[in-house]
Length: 297
Image (cartoon, rainbow, N blue to C red; front, side, top):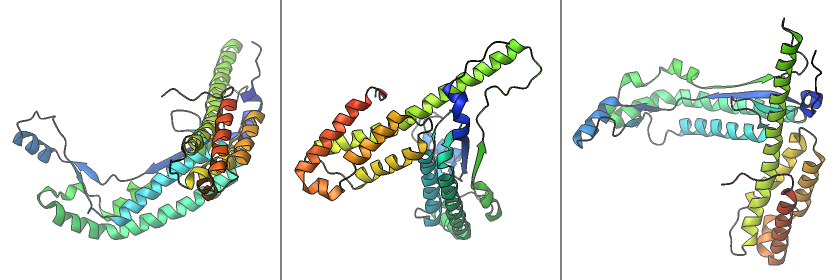
């Protein structure tokens, strides 16, 4: 059998991380109206494909619906913050060090999502009736799911999977074919781990870059979130450093110590401190350059 070549990924990554796939389904509350589109295009002597008219099926305020959509969007963004890039298919890398935090967070999101969904479905019949009076001739009964079906249009779920395991291919093939499959698995895992590590570096670099950009200009206005977000990134990277990279952790500690130690009001009110932190941010970016290069815009 062809000799296997051990890699960082197959030696340690399986005990340090698993894969997670978040699914969020929502109802768009929009509908393409072919009849209205044809009428508008004909009115202006335009071609039949010149424009498409999409109706918003609920009243403009639709508070309960918009709240549910906002919660769904927030869950997706937070999911990305809790995990690392892995593949284009939807799987994300969840370090085991962050598993308990992630599952605790997700249970809270499930409750918030379900509560908001219950509120929306209760308000939906009244919203539909109001939409009928607002859309008038554009209203179509068939555009609207029944109240019973509406619950099924929204879903929130997460599934987990172990990483593909190098050295555990059990198929009835020749040794060299099995070795080729295992080599491919190892290659894909290592490529994906590299993507995850780059993602972690990118988060840290971006937070430092933003601090430098805002603080280097004495007249630039910045929000408290500039520093708060950097703190959040540093805290998260304690759990997201899936390869236990000492360089990444050392840089994280520098950012935490040198850039986030001062409260935003101190930075606004004390030009000397602001300039010092901006200079430190620039030095950290220079130090990071040997480990991470941002994508060219």
